[in-house]
Length: 488
Image (cartoon, rainbow, N blue to C red):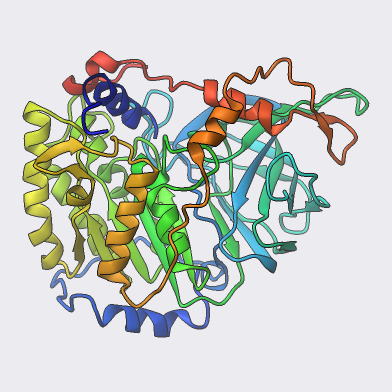
């Protein structure tokens, strides 16, 4: 693997830029977790930007798949979307879903979506949750309506943030929770799912006897927080870019580093993945709803640098320098320390950079450890785990770390920060054989459709998977990766 670096390095680096609250036990866990961390306090008084809402105290995250907003859908009319979400704790639980009609982070150069961009007015015609079985081709369970202030529909205003009403559903072990809703409107914030899980859409026909076909979509509007009422030892947040989101890892295997850590911690910890493809520290440090909701935690991991170096802050024509990036990351860490969260800084991982970009990354990493100590944060040498021995700039596991890289990060992280937790690394899925099994599937000719409960036919997962495999990122500026320009 170490030898395959030249062409793959350029392609993966470009794709990286394109890709991608509390229970009754939380307070006691917080003080326990901090015993092993630094007690250094920042002298400066930081005004917290936390989204203060009682629901973040009642409901904690129950999926490690990121569902924030880093893109925008132009216009839809009665379009249905659904997404399959692995759950951290199975069984019958009360759920509550949080939404934000604002873009969290800048995508690419910001032409299609940028940090703080408010969405347009749109309407929710209907929303449901249901048991999706152990795979998207399994028969689905009963669709349970999700309501908003007692109503099955809702008009959403530009920039509005809101919660659903509570809804109770039983998701058996190893089954998926499916979120489905039907929307009409324009400029709707969404996430570029990057093939991480099954995300699809269809236009329901006016005649219910006509066929409705689900097709893979990479741009999927979702609740930005999937909350469940459950008892946990601590709420854990991971916030960062596409490497945190898990972009470019294998479809529905959830072997990226954040998911692996979530599974290693187990259901006693609520893991909230706030990673977003293309995100910069400057986006996060703007103190918007993205960081504000993520601050509802007891343990925080912050992992930025790659897009700050390569693309720079929204509106910039070049990458940011090390001092500017450091200032933004420091501001993020201070926000987490201000809510008394155990805060862990991940340094900037290797990206096969050369010249000025690698010099910026090296300088940033040299400065980050001291800065983290100055604000009372802990430090994780992300770069050391992911680089090639003897070559600090070489991304040994790829610019988006693959399953093996995710495993190495998980092992190093758990050993350093949670050595008391025993876990078994999830290596049961043979991603390569699964990919080979679906390779060459023709999404237009597969005939093994199965009925869903509205009497129409749905495209099977083989078809959806084939479309996902055929999906290519819309950034083709491979030759411009190293000069800081990213035209779509």
